[in-house]
Amino acid sequence: MSRRRTASRRPTRSPGAGEVLQAVARWLLAALLTAAGLSHLFWARRGYRIVVPDWVVDHAPIDKDGVVVASGAAELMLGAAVVGLPKERHRIGALIALFFVAVFPGNVHQWRTGRPAPMLRSDRARFIRLFLQPVLVAWALWSTAPAASGTRRR
Image (cartoon, rainbow, N blue to C red; front, side, top):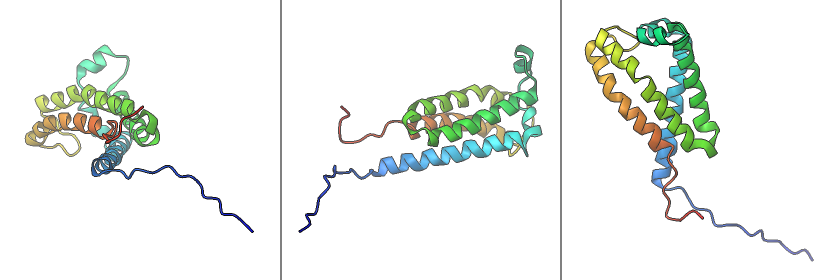
């Protein structure tokens, strides 16, 4: 006679709607960072050089193309890390938010000088882009925040 062994299972908690929304937002953030990174490295690379303020290259040992390439590489790494390193998600989110803050002077420079860049050909588009930056910072922080669950962590 064979006995069936019943494996003891821990009860699993289904993710709530907020957790699902955070996960979707996190994957969309990763997709945005990846697309932006690829555009900085390939098809829009030349257009992004004009966004780099002159003072950046005056005070750093790098030219404008190097800044564009470095920012593209950073975007690719951050996009991969936010989904590929789940245990470090909150720290990666903070790094993404800091990255968005770090590139903000370039957005202000572009708006003030009126220089066109990919998808930002008008003064209105460049001005609206300034208000998108805080949204991106909030998106990065919220989508990578620890899940709010009804149970306490021990």
